[in-house]
Length: 160
Image (cartoon, rainbow, N blue to C red; front, side, top):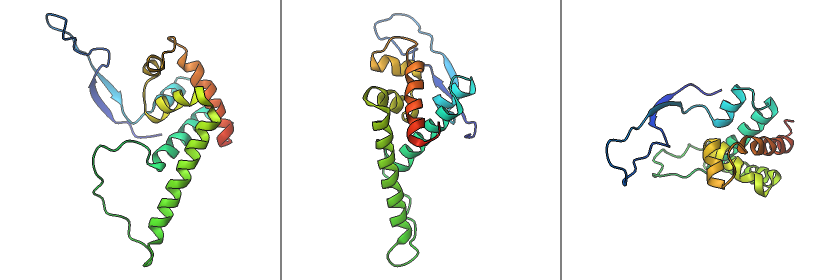
């Protein structure tokens, strides 16, 4: 489990409406940015241990493959190599390529309709309600569909 790290943010439903006159109320909410949406669901008994493990493996592959968008340039130095050929750097590159292949194979195993919710909730960290709206699904359908997707991921990763 990741460390608890709280941040105060504006609630996404409280966006300013330029056409609305008068003062508008905006709530500040405290969120744990170290907790993923699937860890939140699992802590409330809505996911099995196998589903949580499969979701965390997909997230780990996503992070290791470096698929998240970068806004700025990376200024950290490349790791020094063991020898002149830079064996450590090539090992890191191979691990990244392997994670990239595993990530895409896992989404293929989930299937075309289920891969969308996996990416939105597990990788992008979007809430289930936001994912339902973004995908045009009815309210309260996301948990069920995410559960089915996580079952397929558990079979792929061999956790369930």
